[in-house]
Image (cartoon, rainbow, N blue to C red):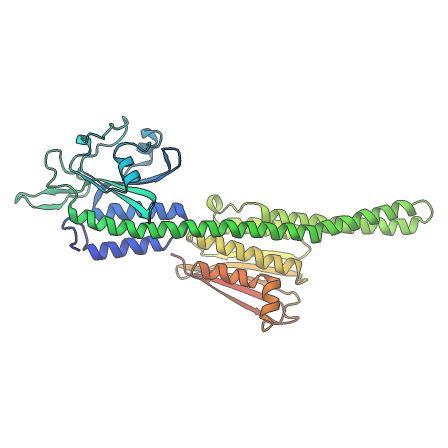
Length: 403
């Protein structure tokens, strides 16, 4: 395949860079944005967009690059599936036009829409399923004094009307974009599968919490009810015993309250998108410290923003390790640290509880969720280490590489 002569890099290098960029992300929104940015860079276009169709003739998502946020807001509602967009989505047909405005299917632009001339579009398909369509416009090249194409200076406008098709997207560009779209389909499919898997994991976690609420809180409330009934029966004939029973009522009520608070912390949606990992961990650990008799601390140092999937995995592993320490180990102190290591981060959750025998992997792994924690770490390119011994407490360490 011949590399496009007007790109800033060779075709092979450009495609390799674009594919590596896509492979770093697992969230659908991140993959969509990376596809658009990479395609625009790959073909040296002024504008790029990726539309993901819905089932109602519109777009569920429409991601753009090259248009400012202010411009995008001024343009108005998302486009509908009509004209050239419909041709690519319905027939999986690539489109390459010298001037999109001259095409009979062109229906005009909204008032705030930037001017676009030369145009190339490519469906993004997984087999027979159309996942979306890539659109690129205004090849950033112009003719020099010898009539040869060269890259436009930074900030220069796209090729003037009247120079197409000489300055437009080439057949080589189309070949390059076709290969890129095939890999984009794989990246998008993988991201969707990952998000679906995460939804199932969250559903499983909620089922686990419901089971724990039944086993812990419900049983305590049942005991509370029986003890209160006993105190009522004794209050007249044996006030001393009634007083003891009421003290037991207070103790059981406090334990039930602790269990409920801890469950609320785990059920509450994590504020990763708004607050980031450090702030989210600090908030949740502060609540746990207040809700439990054990001292729970948190410290962080030098941690930078990480890919969304890695931050979520670190948060979930921290929650699982804290759950084990506070409910099963009998720990008096639990310390959580999050520190930077290279481009990534290391999470440690250490407790002074009863510990366990690490060689009993099968039994302890099931009981403490170690398999789930290792899967979470491995799923984002990280690793998990567990150090424990009977009577010596436990340390869970998870490291992620960053990105």
